[in-house]
Image (cartoon, rainbow, N blue to C red; front, top):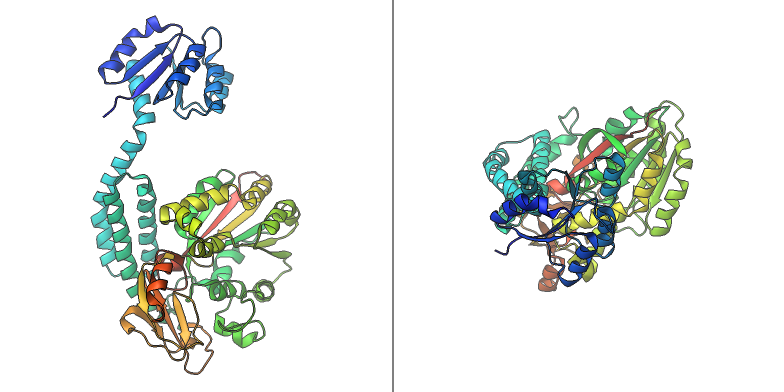
Length: 521
């Protein structure tokens, strides 16, 4: 293994000989220079240093000036400022100039060692510890997966799995990541069995059931509305729990989390069914019955979510016994997204502003169609990274930062999640059958009953029935439905794409988070 190379610039290097000797005995390679000019010139000849130590007070140009030039020239190695001066303004300027750490003279050799290990070995040490900790936790997770669960304990288990999945994202051990992926797959197999055994019972009168799409607003939103505090309800289509945890640190810069909660998406876990139910406060079969002109079945022509504002207005009138100034905004393209920033302050005049943001849903669909996105979001780690990058630079985050300057309440949720499919399931169906890869509804379906959740009486789970003999089937775990025609082509085309509509923890267990801006009234 090559020695770690350190460049150290200090005009009092003769006083640092004991520290240099100590580090060299530990196996580090040290190049010493007496000023910032020499350091910059030397980096032109040999830029391959792992870490740089800079004295803050050097003749010619100061350590801060040297640091600024190092950063401006694009050098990426961490820089540690060594100084006698503890003045707050100097430290703030150094931190603002992106130092990795700073040390106060006289420098203890062990301080140097700890700093080097923190900056150079930190990722490796953290990765190794996370891998070791997961191996210890593996058996406990295995036992929890094997035990008979209820809907609340499945949420707890899912959160634990995501916790470990995120921790292991930076692991350099592909074997550990494979074990994690396999354990998550085993959990989804058991979760699917749980849904097969209990889902229908959730729709019986007085059943012990989780909050679901159709009672989400009543159970988790309306009770928190406040006359004196504008509420922004933001629904990010297709947001999974792991994606929420990725953007949570960003949002937490401006907002304080009051409660992190969950609900279960109804089946099918698609926008047409789950989001209409959220805004209607009704199951799809009830929407079809009460508002037949507002509901379109899968194969009916036209947009399936065009009546969300009307459904929301009707629910508010039914459920809230007072005047509520509210607004519904749907963001489906960049132009509307940019308008959101301009209009954000005006929205503070509303009691409730509902914003539906479609980017993540569009990303998952575009990933299926575009080869470049398949490369950019090749797996869950990359998919999360792409979500974080989008959010950080999105007009939505810009608008949220703007409204965070005033007292507001923010509720973030989704309509359903998505899963990366891997296992093909053969289905034979007629031309009237829906095209979705994770569920089918039709009257002439042929399939292996062991591979699906079969709903022959859709009305029992709040679903409309397009025909008297219509049956719904749902794919489990990582399955996806394919027709026999051109089977091999579509097997490869859709494998490892992110889909939704079926049964998995990722699709059904949805986050809902209530936050408040950090400013006081």
